[in-house]
Length: 67
Image (cartoon, rainbow, N blue to C red):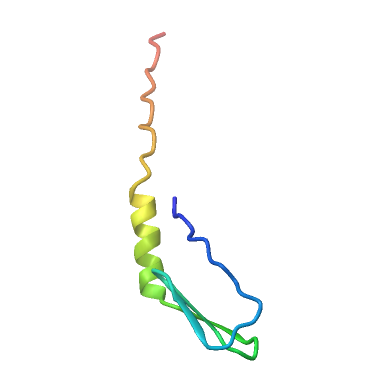
């Protein structure tokens, strides 16, 4: 499962803040605007890596009873 990084948000932002993750970049401007920039290929790579790490239980074989 993916982990999150804790981010500290300051009340008085005086300059543009950029926080870059593996598939999301968050840009916060001094006027309060926030821009989100997604990297779809990186998100797909992260999802595939997460699902590949999950091992499903093997299917049970059923035996037929002879009459």
